[in-house]
Image (cartoon, rainbow over all chains, first blue to last red; front, side, top):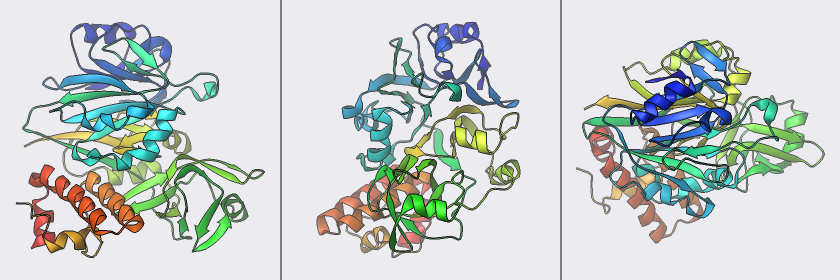
Length: 327
Length: 74
């Protein structure tokens, strides 16, 4: 169950012992009592009535009745790999990452190499702030069991569930590689000065500007059929630095995405045909902005609009979801 | 039953020599990670380590990967 609720309604759910994943304004989350919840700051949501910016309600994802938080824990930069191994016996881990923090950068770069990362679903999102407050406030995450918030650690809820329930993490990504140049980077990182374009090393900022590349379109890499985006944060012609919202990885072939003409139409075509029960989902702030999702619905997928999505690793401009099926 | 690590198809799989598109998102990303790992280090030890990671995924999700196992190992 997921919905927008008032502080008093959320407080009642916490008092009733419900297991919750919450998203909302810092001033609202600060008012909540201790309990079985984790949360992160953001004032944008895809609610049942469509995309909305809201500062007086909290988006609540209530986990199913027989699902329990085995543990809730915050992880500093030097202990992020422990997320994968903690919560013995749990079925999955839900993590929330404060945007722009060291842990955001470190998890993004290092998570694919964490031993055992893929042996248990890890899903989550990157918390953010009102876009008008960028640079004024820092995004926060909350460990409700301790009543603590931080802008420097990742919070994780390790969740157990009945054995007869089969979980799946998946993504809906409207972007696919365009038919343009092959782009390969020589180093991992959230920024790049150069790239190998069709094998030739070029200043990447100049390349983007000379060809008038629309940087609202992400770079896309084909990971064995999974389209993985890296979104552009900015192109600084003066310094020659191109910044990204997720790291590019050396040796991976990227292409500029093909344009998406009709987000709502394309999205409806990509919704899984088989009947699934969506437990949690989140969608990217860039999709919300560039595809005008305010007031528009995305099928059964409701949740926070985020500064990054986690499906094992950090993703950009991608709807990410956790679904369950009875065996 | 997931074949033993010594089965020759494992090394072909991680080297991308078997036409195969995983269905599970985790396996799609893992196969890409393994491919990049082996581009950086193709030693026997690295090959065994990466086969171990892929095989561990198949063991963990064996019930969901029956069709994949049949396709790869026959």
